[in-house]
Image (cartoon, rainbow over all chains, first blue to last red; front, top):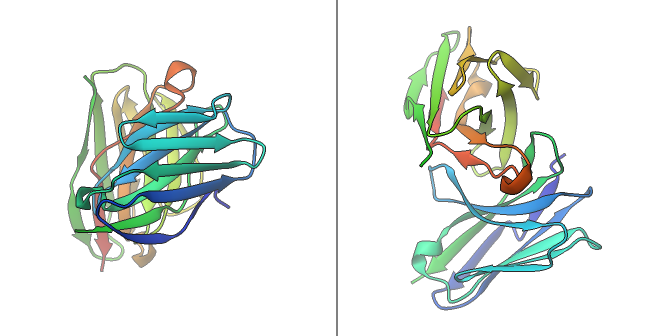
Length: 110
Length: 115
């Protein structure tokens, strides 16, 4: 089974609202990463948070990590129609593999 | 800067025909290379990864194979395609752990439809 599970599976909001996506995982991790995928395109890395970090910011993105609950959240503030995409969390536990969840599909209505 | 090229972007193949998807990475040396498959509306399934020339690890037993003939070239192949091989195939690279934290960089993907 996949290491990361995103919640919700789909999210629809109005432009200007905040979007929050959650990710839960099962085993200890080195880091957790969030990626974005526009429809029919490759994934693009957004942000990486290490296991000893609790919060990280990048522009309108805010990521939190709670290793005691094995969960992470991605907050996109003041969303725009261009933020419409699928968002994936991915966990790295060492070695050569980064394991991806099933993703959250975000739709931002203009 | 590093770039990754993957081709072809789209292909329609009959059942039983062979497959070859190719990927090359520029601007880095000795990358880890990956092939993922994504079913419609789903997450990514890791198919193969490679940590060096000629070194291939298979994650899922299946109808596909991978090869790495050169440091920055990764090829996904099949001798006889099945309908179930249809999907979106993504090539990717990383520099492993350490500072990069095994961040994965993806190509633009190849849409395969087996008919």
